[in-house]
Amino acid sequence: MALDNPRQIDPSGAYTPPPPAAQWIFEDQISANRAGTIWLMFFFSLFIVAAVWAAGYALGSPEYAIILAIAAAVVAFVLSYASYYNSDKLVLSLSRARPVTQEEYPFLVHTLEGLCLAAGLYTIPKLYIIEDSAPNAFATGRDPAHSAIAVTTGLVEKLDRYQLEGVLAHELSHVVNRDILLSTVAAVLVGMIVLLSDWVMRSLLYGGRRRGGSREGGHPILLLIALLALFLSPIIAQVMRLAVSRTREYLADAHAIKLTRYPDGLAGALAVIGGDREPLEVANKATAHLYFANPLKGGSLNNLFSTHPPIEERIQRLLRM
Image 1 (cartoon, helix red, strand yellow):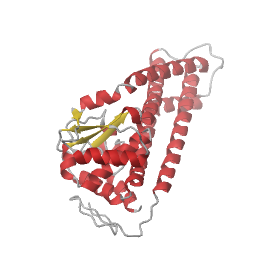
Image 2 (spheres, helix red, strand yellow):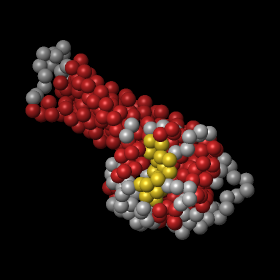
Image 3 (cartoon, rainbow, N blue to C red):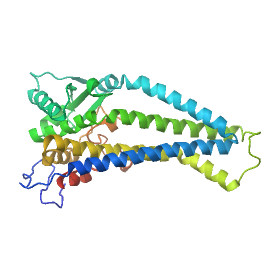
């Protein structure tokens, strides 16, 4: 993975030290990513309102459609709420992760403790290991007091100490920035859009338009636009969710450098993981968004709908810090 940069990183993990007068611009990076996330969530909410309006217009009863949309949102929230408090246990179990002891991996434990001090955390996330030769890691949990970080044995074996520190800092940043909470909120919003659009399309297909609405007649062009918006809403919602997730990955990279003060460590880790072709056996499409890098190897479709930004772009951003 050759890069046009004075500090080139290759898949073997070799790198040159950063220049003495490195420019620390991670604060600007963090601010930009946070602002971008706020705008994305704002437009996400506007899109939900537009989908509700489209449902009301298509069915001839805006009030009835809003009531059903609220009901769908409540159902999605209840399901997400129930899984939210048990998501860490479920994901760790699906990933076949086991707790790490200080005697087994002292460097990992001590490094995580040091990063927590740098981040101002009084509680240390639980550390887990996954027996898998593919290098990767993920963080889970609803808040710093109920969080866990899991790394694969391949990550420990294939990365050096600085690169391991960078990966741990990235995952800890997800914990500090409450990214799991943001993902849950986005899932509720996407679920509401999908449920609403699916109900309206089924109603129109099998039951026809509701009669007796407050409107008489309607504008065919506007109705066509409303139906098109409802048909495309699940796809648009998924794209917006991917955009939010990718923004959070950039933010976690920048915040990790704030903790380690060494961009090359994290950039080197990304280069090693990007050059490794072993698939992560315990990963699937339901848990792929949690990992440090996309664990689903191969296939342009996986890359197109990946919740992770391209590794090359992440490296380039880090090397500009």
